Image 1 (cartoon, rainbow, N blue to C red):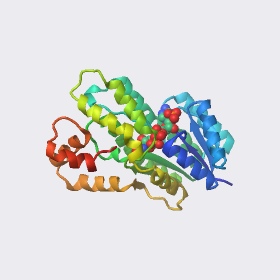
Image 2 (cartoon, rainbow, N blue to C red):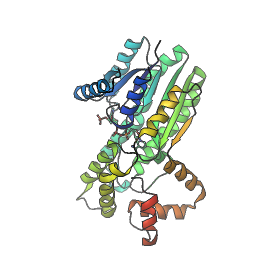
Image 3 (cartoon, rainbow, N blue to C red):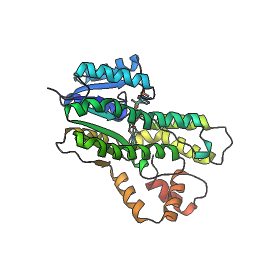
Image 4 (cartoon, helix red, strand yellow):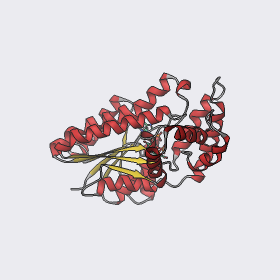
Length: 297
Ligand SMILES: NC(=O)c1ccc[n+]([C@@H]2O[C@H](COP(=O)([O-])OP(=O)(O)OC[C@H]3O[C@@H](n4cnc5c(N)ncnc54)[C@H](OP(=O)(O)O)[C@@H]3O)[C@@H](O)[C@H]2O)c1
């Protein structure tokens, strides 16, 4: 029997790549979209690529939508998917003091609560079958915080903690849980982040220059950042490998960032990150190097 995989947020970027790659590799893919027009587009892209997949409507921030989607997949698969890829995610850029509760709650609802809820809904079926996999798509931002990225980083850090707890809780039931931590890759997420920053424009803030630098960099980063293929490959490896790793760190930027995070003193790191992000308080001498090598976009 073909192994079934539920991929959340499959209308673009990493999720779309994973859904198409897995469908091409023979998995029974349930790819989620937030509304029917997006689902139709997703089926058309799959048809163009000559792969078959099924679409399911899902908004991970909506508990009823999650229940409906999981019930639909459980019925189609006779008990639920063999694997879940918690990929759906949204960006949020802005200084901690500039972001309103509503924006923060929406970020956490999608990037943290939604992912945990989806895991909770599919786990009983996996336990009953005695096997299953859950792959959480996270980011270097979950391990390393930066100015202007506090809430996005907090959400991914929370996802990392939940991933680790879930790995220990679900492992004895035969469910393998893995996390993919990626550096920056070109996708629709940069444009969405830039749109969020544009919405902050005009409000009195200490961080106006940082927002202008970040928005401009985000708008043109699609042409500069590498393709998200390595992230797609890592997610697929976590599903295809007989013995998947617990953690996949994707990209030289992410690996170098983690190493530097251990080796470099906090005061130096803070300075570099301020400069990289265009935040106030950075020394101009480090600005060029920091923007060249350390900016996340
Ligand atoms: N690109 C990077 O540099 C990078 C790096 C590290 C980690 N990541 C993570 O990788 C994952 C995928 O991001 P991406 O780069 O592929 O971005 P993307 O192209 O913007 O894709 C995000 C996907 O999530 C979906 N989504 C957003 N809100 C949702 C909700 N409430 N319910 C269900 N689906 C929702 C989007 O659907 P709609 O089209 O309907 O909005 C879209 O399909 C995210 O978790 C992101 O944090 C990305």
